[in-house]
Amino acid sequence: MKVKLAIIMAILFSFFMLFYGGYYLINPDLQGEEILNRQGIPYPTVIAHRGASIEAPESTAAAYIKAREMKADYLEADLQRTKDGEIVVIHDQTLGRTSNVEEIFPKRKDDPVGSFTYKELKKLDFGSWFNQTSRYAREEYQGLEILTLTELIEIAKGGEHTPGLILETKDSQKYPGIEAEIVDILEEEGWLAADKEKEDFAKTIFFSFKEDSLREFKELIPEIPRLLLITDNMITRRSWAHWLGRAEGLADGLGTKGFMSWPWYIAAAHEKGLFVFPYTINELWQVKVLAHFQSSGYITDRPDVVLDFLDRIPKSLVKDLEDEV
Ligand code: G3P
Ligand code: CA
Image (cartoon, rainbow, N blue to C red; front, side, top):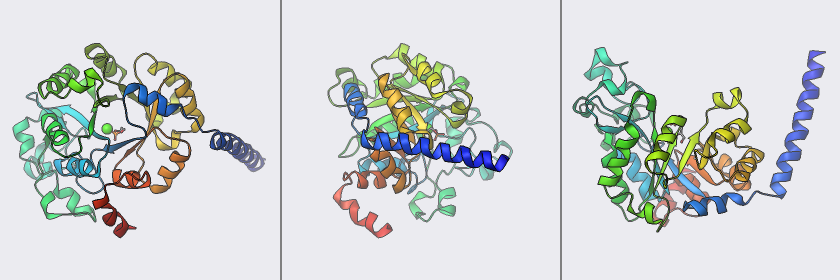
């Protein structure tokens, strides 16, 4: 009986998917481009997640320079604060996965990032772990140091192509006041001028899973677009409509896991004037599916794969990519 019911449910679900999927394939939702244009954000947007982080150690200068040279639209970076107040780029709450902390500070290997001073973090090697596991290992990655927000801005400014910055406040509740400090650094670096004049495109977007952090940014500098990130947990606990409601008035867009980027979810967001960026889109088939549904953006560890699909890869990199296929 249970098996029969499961089969009936599976058939009904398949019909539902075919009907809705087919509908949006025939009638793609084209509002994404208009919504992004209004914000001054390029369409479709290619976002290098922690840099070109398949090819170089994540969140390091090497990964971000690579993404800039690939001509990604944005460099995505997770920001945290050291014990002595430096804003650094690192994703995890602890240092064990992406550095040699166990070797340098054996007793502190599970301590949070914010319990280390900047000087202490500078002693760590953020590249060798990658060389031990990746086919993209390179000698020059050994000894890569922690990156600061200021250094990240310098990287963004330092090439022929100037990508924008997508800055995520990671575990912002642990770092009260970090939003104002981030805005101060952007101001000091002269990074915000073009945003305010809306000359080119929005050079900065703030990301967070935390509504409080977005509220803080909205208060500080409302001109800069904000995006509310949604985890799979969040979406299983509450409906998509719920999260759209939470984002309305607070954020300009939502960031969802790729498998949650149903075209009808995206259409509902567009109806509210919100754009949707799916993460983390690393496989070509995922890019193709999302492109069919006119995805507004792609948050990816492999910006070259997405840019190549969109015919936007710099010519000098095309051969490299062909070699890989
Ligand atoms: O780009 C979205 C993404 O940054 C959120 O997830 O865990 O990689 O920071 P995470
Ligand atoms: Ca992130």
